[in-house]
Amino acid sequence: MSAPFDRREIVIVGGGIIGCCSAYYLTRHPSYDPARHKLTLIEASEIAGGASGKAGGMLAKWAYPSNIVGLSYKLHAELAKEHDGVNRWGYREVNCGQLVVRGRALTEKSAGKAEGGKSESLQKRSAAATSKLKSTKTPQDLDWIEPELLRAYESMSGPGETAQVHPYQFTTSIAKLAQEKGANIIFGQVTDIARTESSVESVTYTDKTSGEVQTIATTDVLVAAGPWTKTILPEVPISAMRAHSVVIQPKQPVSAYCLFTNIDIPANFNPEKKSRPTVAAPEIYARPDATVYACGDGDREVPLPKTSADVEVDQERCQEIIEQVGSISDELRDGEIRARQACYLPNCDSGGGPLVGLTGVDGLYLAAGHTCWGIQNAPGTGKLMSEFIFEGGAKSAKIGSLDPRDYM
Image (cartoon, rainbow, N blue to C red; front, side, top):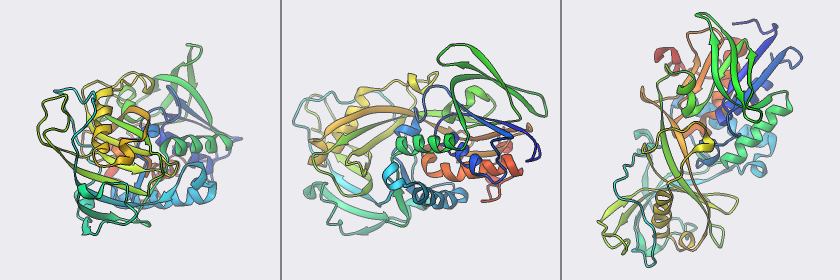
């Protein structure tokens, strides 16, 4: 690693929340000097174009991995306080719980979900998280779930342990704050990281606007490309899972809850199809901008596309989420559908995740594989990466279990 007083040419690959938070904390590190250090972030499509703009935005002290969660949760609060995150990106503390509820049959024609598609859990909650569930009376302000359908409410956490941000607003705001301190953002597709056995030398990319191939000499490269990390570093054990979500605008704002659901779907749920009794588990997050975000299970039906701009949205999977949440809430059933969207989450094939830190090549760093907790763990990851690059190792948290060298 170069000494901090030497000239540094730092390149971050990826304009999602991990790359943007890394740029932010690098420009705030005591050793950073814009007169001697050049920081360039390269993004293939747009800032927050993937999961960083389409995630739920939930923050929780019971998220995983535990060795980075506490740091990151605290930094979220500090960022919101310093930069007016309440107004800029919707930061607020919220209640979190699980609903056991009976769904209602549909009364109107609807597309429904195509038969045969395989679904996978997003695995947002670990065993430690679910152990926090405790039966309690349904909160009075959770009045947007139909009471006659509710079978049980289990509280998981409240303000102080659970918060939220609007992910797109958070990511784009952090990117702008990094730019204000000297970070340069370029839009282009990275095609190669030239390296010897001992160090990185340059990054080559195709400019998004001109189509020209450009090469940047570099002393340090951080790959934070989420599910696209493997296309840049094939040796990294990260795979992609597609996740669909919808954004609904109720006619009236609803109370601040992040809800995990367990919905009993009746056999006559959709008269247009021959349906069987089943259970659905969409996640539902009320947001301070008066919208409600809801997401369903993940799938691997469509391979990862070239960029986040090329993600294919399965309208039937989105419609299924709309039907499920509408079956338990009049406010959601009668609300305006503001977005039907999909993104890809980066999963670590080695189990757990993410992979954060040094690789076997001097000057080449990795911060990827954050699964569904990228927004939650991004500030902690970004701060740690600034320490790796300017100080040679993690100082703010003990993250030996996340060492990329154990898996590459």
